[in-house]
Length: 349
Image (cartoon, rainbow, N blue to C red; front, side, top):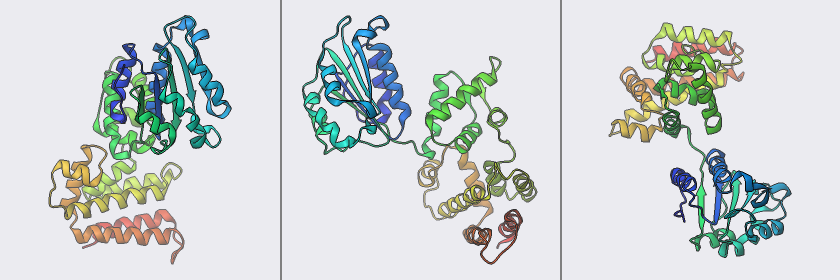
């Protein structure tokens, strides 16, 4: 019997036990991040029942159409051909009045069929610890509870690097940053893009570079918000203007609201860093919620280039730009306003 678990960091242990044939009678898989939930369910489907026995010993129900009485009756059945009966209730969050309806499963959770494996997935949220089903689960040694929280942006670098190691490829820090910035925090999308990049790199390379990311997900390596804040951190005025001119010519992929947000975040981090007593790498990662250690160098460059007063002046200029870009006391084009904003940032004292 695999050990109980309730943290997303232990999904590997759950998968290892499944691959070894060590199954719990019940799995409750829930949370905002569906990737790990699907990973565990896929493994259970693959290993719990042999392929030739699945017509007899495997049943899959979907929340929107499931009759919970039928689900429970199926879970109580003994296997016909193999050593265990597998019953999976997917998308339980789609059941009307799901949280109260699912409590009817509590008696089964307390006394499961030991010749079966019952899996419940609940995506988008966690079941309440005070619900009947979770109270029953907390008292049972037969239940594996797995919570899969949404991975925050500053935490994404770790899963990306882990996935690349699993695929036996390396990835540059800047490539990690570009993926996070342009793909977002959906692990399924991120890992899907990495798979595409591995194919694009071919057998000749085992490294995902920033150039490879830029070439294959439709962005410019040199002209993006990541490179803009880097240019700002070094007070590279000519490069900053070149990037903004590129943004002007490609407005669909470079909306000013995203650029303003990136700059506001950068200068806010500069202000925070100036007032930190501990400016070690570990402290900066934690206090600034940086996405990867690569960003630390940019912050340190920015602190050297901008005093607290200058960083606060930059934030004030950004707020003024935000108002004007919305038509408050200004009728200028937003990209002209952006150019004016950069001039103010570089000349503030």
